Every structure is written in C-alpha cells, then in structure tokens.
Length: 304
Image (cartoon, rainbow, N blue to C red; front, side, top):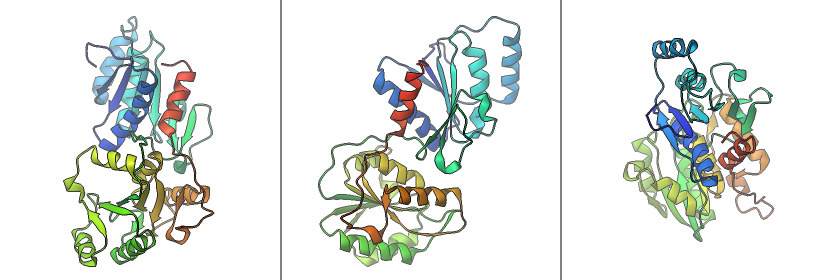
C-alpha cells in the first residue's frame, strides 16, 4: 500500500475481468460520495503475508484510514483478509469479496456472488445477477443495434453455420436497425471470412480495432444487443446498459452453472431468443443496476 492512504483498497490480481468487477462496485460508491478515494494494490506472497502478520501480532494496529477492502479472484483472498486485519483494525474496516471465494464465506464481511454459482444462504452473502461491472446506461439512439460474438469455449459448442444462420434472421427481422458487430479474442478468423462472404447489412468492427472504452460507449447508446451465449459477461453488461438483449443460441456441452444462469435469465424475461423476437407480449424490464444495489447496501451498513 502507498503512503497516501485511501478510503478503499482494491486488491487486484491484474486480470481485467476481476478488476472490472471491483471497479464496478467502487465506482458505484464514488457516484454516491465523490470525496471517497481508492487505491489498487496487487496481492502479495504468503511469505510476505506471514511476515506482515507476525510484525503486527504484538504491536498496536497500524495507522490507516482504509475503511473497505475489495477483491475478486482467488489469488487475492489471503491478501484481502490479512490487509484487513493488519491495516483496518483502527477503522474497523470490512472485507468485501466478489465471486465465490476459495476460503470459507464466514471469513469475509460481505460476499457478492452471482446467483448462477448458487451460494450458500448466509447473512453475509448477497446474490447478484451476474458479476458486477462498470457499465452505465446512456441515452439510447433510435434503431441502433450491437452484436457481440464470442467463440469456442468450455461450456458451449461453437458452430459457425448456426451463428451465421441466426445473424441472417436477426438482420431480416429487424431490418430498420443499424447493426454494428464486434468479435472477441476467441472468435475464429474463419467466422469473419464467412460473415464477410454472407454480405449481411452489418458494420463489422473486429475487437482488435476497438479501444478499452469502445464497448461500454456502444452499449450505452444501443437500443438492442444480441450476444452469443458463450459471452456471459457481455450478456450482463448489455442488461446493465439497458439494452433489449437477445441470445444467439449455442448448444451447451454440459449442464453447467453458466447454462443454468442463462436459463434463469430466460425464465425471468430479461433476455429473449429469436423465437420471441417481435413478440408484442414481451416483457420490458428496467436495466440491471447490481453494482449500485450492492454499493447502496454497503452505505446503508455505514461501512463507508
């Protein structure tokens, strides 16, 4: 930790997806109280943690103003708990973990866990719709649509012809929409070749041509978003952005927690399939705001 002590300390393993979740929560807190400060720290080795614990065991608590420690990712859990004990005793700091931790749930003050992980029912556990993220809804531009394409994954069978067939139907059913399609790092080059050959009315922007803020900006203004089922984090980001979300279906390899989570989204009416496209009885639900909901809970508890 630096010499300038923040209100909130994020323990980050450097993985963008994990940091995105922590920042989603912290930025929601900052939108409520702009005077709050935060710092991002890496996890440290167990040897360093042991030395830290021993050095603080028989001494008065370290001088620190940190009130909240936040972390996502298994490598961060020990550092989160040790930092809380060593640097947060004076302020009665709290440890908040995102996603299912590898250590006992009762060791943390608050566990924010996606409902598809089916966490235990405990007072310190809050189920969330998907992982938290940083996306914010914006003013929607009329007749704008975004298509997010993933690729081969351990949970779904990647079938290019199946995906292309669904894209043709989407463009046909929503002909008045200006479509932008982007890919992921997992998207095979062969898919882009086949897509170009299909000559669909879609503006193709490969992920290599986008910057870090491109997708959040597009999601904020897009009215409609279709996402391949393997790109689960993108599904929840699109829902958070307030888009009308459709799933480009893929065959599930197993009855995984990811597949079960998507099934619950379908049952809730938050996402649709091509079979439901244009259905006048389709539900219109408000955008997800899970980061804000969790931030409000932390504030209500008086932790920050």
